[in-house]
Length: 272
Image (cartoon, rainbow, N blue to C red; front, top):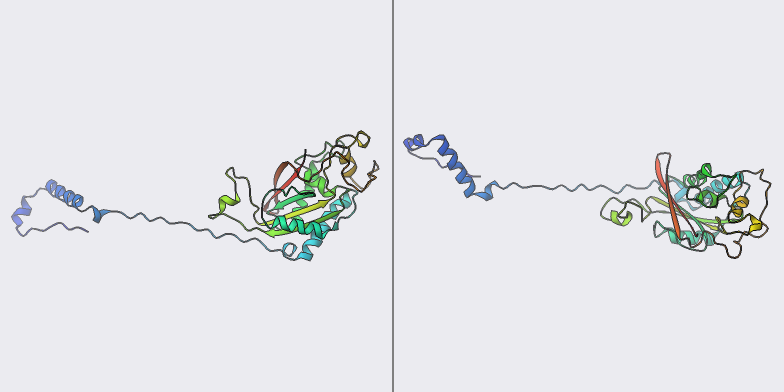
């Protein structure tokens, strides 16, 4: 703080005009810059990382397994496919991949469906199965980004499944760039990350002319209902020689959807 000096002689103060007094004050201010500096305080807003809900279908291995099988087989029954059985080898593979929280495919030897952000395991499966609304059963065109999760889910010659769910948390702090790419696309799963592996893989293309051409296996393996009376595969379901399936896919398709107020994201891949 600065003070304006007082003068003992009243006649001197009386001789100073208001304008001159103002000039004197300005001179004193300029002569004491440190006393007039303003301190700008920066407040950093720290937002706590939200926690993921912990429903039993994620936290209990048995409940998770039962939920995945029940939800998946409900769709399969409606499309003339036999029940999937749980495969521990596929489960371990899914767990190993999910633990990295990497939002991309593993490029492994199995069919693969991924999802994150759904509030429970059945909601993730529902998101895959709900794609059937967009599938043209009368004129199947093979794999499409809108229906690829569904077609893998109900693929008739797929017999085994193994899944894992890992809580990857949420990020909007200093590590946010690691969770989101520069374009805003996800590079790391957030919330509960569900990975399911299928064997033999579905979404197989490149069948022989006798099987109906390139998309023939879709007509056989993705059926509209239990009343289907068309051709049936005669082998164990392994892709015919020279065909490619969902393993080691080189194309990734992402879809998003709202499930009961929670946003979830799905990802799958195919080899073209």
